[in-house]
Length: 341
Image 1 (cartoon, rainbow, N blue to C red):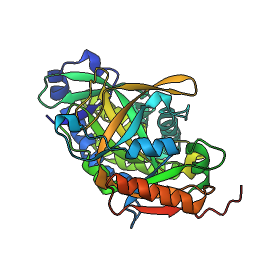
Image 2: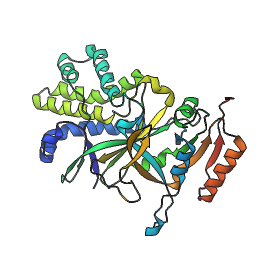
Image 3: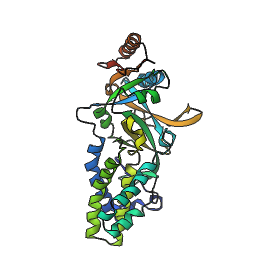
């Protein structure tokens, strides 16, 4: 069963048959433009093969610990990344940036589009609800987004400060093969998976909107009927919802973030050897929902040690841990940030 992401707050009132009958054109337009953009906006810079997850020493051990279920005959070595529910991340502006940016974009481009089309897009309201619709039409499930954050660089001083959980810069960054992470996108297990390169600069965000809206502008220019208008509004809302986790305020630009997002039904119960059941942990006094997402051990390519750890001992012990847990060809590096304390 392959999965489609459907994101619109009004879909709860529509049957699957009605959606397919009246909105198929809009979904087709969105799917075509999405296909063109996904590769360019999730692709790393030329020559980059890894993305990097910053964590504490406890996080390092938990991620790299073998998660295979040998009691049930599972001998495949797996690692586990924690995906946290979207509303428990550290950016209180989460989800909101894309809609505020879109409103600014509409004003910037106002003189370049027809007044009637501007009237359509200017009145589009944000929708945070996410639904998964299976192509067989048997069900629709309301979903939550669970997010795991990476960076495009493995030795950034602000990231050591944020994510190593210590004022002494005593954490680690783990390098994961981006291509193997992307292979995880294909699943038939009742959930959806996406990878986004986060955009911070307004010009990049406007370029994203330009590329998505152009086919819709052409379609509306050719046919401005009420039915077509409804399809276009749906397609634009779907586009905004799809990229709501890919745009952030420019204040976070130093993170150079890449995001993996799991869209899980609210009733999700876990899939053996792929995603755990929804679990809960303590974080700064909050009870935070998360899931473990299991990856093949070959995804792990590098471990970078933070600036102020004693270099020889830290490197020796990490290598020993990796060797004892059957990791092959993982490059252990020490930070090159020239900080004294």
